Image (cartoon, rainbow over all chains, first blue to last red; front, side, top):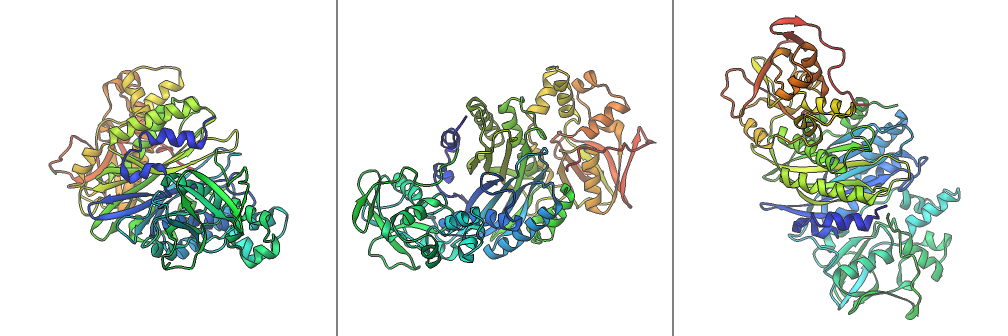
Length: 307
Length: 307
């Protein structure tokens, strides 16, 4: 069995062009003459990233949103995409999928320009992919690795809503609608990403979990990061449903599926978008947590680990 | 069950931008300011496009070659690509795959700049994809739909070698090496494609079978096409192994996996690359076949139909 990190290590030995950014960023940044493009490709697998009975329109939405979120993290405006589709056993499923695809493409400003469709053998999981291309708002899109030792760590929006939505669905609940929508129909922070690219030193989107993604940014930047969990922004519906104590905050910060933007910026900078300061960087390595300033233990699971 | 054509019809209702070329070409052609890009995305599914015991390095090679061939058909020089990979149960498989990937990327001039890796549930088929980006050699890359009624139909190289290689492997043979290599390690006709883009009125690559692909070019161009099967170029090893009679030519022309370039050009044009004239276009629709000028029946199966 190969793990995802081990396989990416193999790929890194051949992806040596600077545009690949060491396969360590949300997206590739390719410059052709004077035109710079941001490119990303994310896949969703039935039974892994979505369930067979999830609404197909929502699966299509998510496929688009997770890719658009990678573009947003690099401050890029979505432009065009190509799909990769496993044909369904069910014509209604495919029709609903295309409907959701159209809604998500329209919302995120992506043109569908091509792709491939395959039949898979009976009983096989659907494998869906998208390749998305965007245009950066600054000449050099922010990486994950640019955090400075004096920077604060900030996050947009609220954290944990997508995880809460999934948890509710898994227990048969369909309310509150905001949490369900956060899970099923996340919206990439495109305008925020474009604005942040101007001032942030490092940006990534929160997809696998706030803690694991923050730890990745710190490692890529050669620094340690500290987070005060009491500062993690929670939505009113999250607080009403899950709570606001330490356990709730840990669940929010490790659940993933947020598609908010996590960024490093001068702690005193005037930020162009609403964002919460949740911590900062220091010399060293690793992640340390506190709760209203009191050190607390780091949970064993920081987020969703692949492979 | 949705068929591939039915699903693509659904996608066409949303892929209305001209860069999508009606989802009816080998690749998309996207212009950003003054930079035009050619983009394609092809997938390979275990058990459908390759067998579980095919050598992984050869599968990787083919994944790259089929995408590079789409770029070649549009006269584009390969530039960069993103992979989509289903993690293997077998670390040796993945290591050999990456080795073949590197060889094929180097051969075709593609930089690996990103992608995604997923775990699939146990017992599931591998689904592999590549998105490839190329730079066109002419301002408007040739489509499939530009054939003129006075044009001849031409093809590069020889036809049927890939099919013959597969047939040999399926019967336990590993010789002649040229036929096995044509199946396992096809080479996209990149330089030929760039040269043909200057003079051809319509170009596509032969992937599903010469006859079905020629019929598609004719339909896209609003014309009928005629092919003299005796003119279909066969390699010496194909002739020695399979033969050169009408049945052999039909097998070659319907087997697929050729990755040669099929093109429409002025019948008297001076061609910049070696190519064989195998037929021509007329008013009307459909495909008619002859053998040394004598009309023959069109076989029921023109090539490899998906879905």
